[in-house]
Amino acid sequence: MERNCKIAMIGAKENILPFKAVGVQVFPVSQYFEAVDLLKKIARDFSVIFITEDLASEINETLDRYRAKPFPVILPIPGATGSTGYGMKNISHNVEKAIGVDILNIK
Amino acid sequence: MARLNVNPTRMELRRLKTRLKTAVRGHKLLKDKADETIRQFMLYIKENKSLREEMEKEVSSVMKSFLLASAVTSPEAMEEAVSMPGFSIDLEIATKNVMSVPVPVISIIPTEKTELYPYSFASVSSELDMSINNLSDILVKLVKLAEIEKTCNMLADEIEKNRRRVNALEYVMIPQLQETIKYITMKLDENERGNITRLMKVKQMIESSAEIH
Image 1 (cartoon, rainbow over the protein chains, first blue to last red):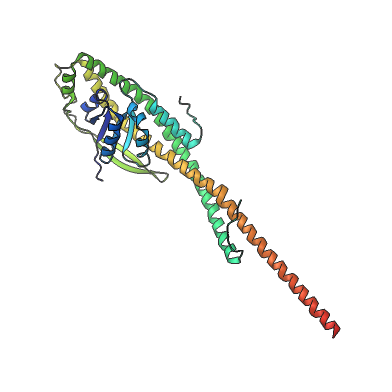
Image 2: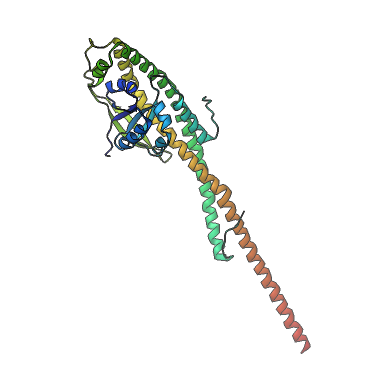
């Protein structure tokens, strides 16, 4: 597999610096269209990509393209401002899609 | 329900009956698959939810302490401190099969941690040490969550697709086949009856003409 075994992180500069210190390769972006281009470029190389929730919610359509394949795994994580509920919404969306109703009671 | 556009012949009837048998068998199998996939999905999604809740709390606190650290240090010094990480993380990636859906399996290859803090302690505050220490601890959890969340995504997709197949078989394919089989049987029976009546009529005609002579 030509995919490398590294973790990448996309987000605003102040959010990704701590991840850089623990050995994650970081890619700072400020605008969401930059994030789209960057994601397309690095999706082929990295197997796990972290992305901050605020960015992820803006580029939902681009993220949808990677949902059907096992790799890359794109994981939205909260930034410095705390959780926006985007990740939880994804979970409840999945439950609704699979079962029909949200039985886990996620707001 | 519309019936299929086929010739009402015995050959066609035989063919349709085999198709119906296959469709019913396939429907049963797919329904069983749906049940099992949903059971698996429930296991994963529960873990996904609790893990995400935990992770969001922890990441937020790391981010907060990092923010605090950057408040007391100059941005240049901060960037300099983390810009040369002492090591990089290697992952081991593979796929496994859950209900014939290929899902990712990811694990971190443990490396010998030479030095967790890639900076001198003099230049930055202690909050940075704390946030980096915590972050490297929860990184394992993050990777696990990434794996599980992807699995849930893919299973949800698969369940949706499977449900469409089951419904298409149950409400379109099988009724259509049954209707067509019924139509052909009726048509063949009707032909048979027509044939018998004709024979009886011919027999009667022959008998009556024999009486005259």
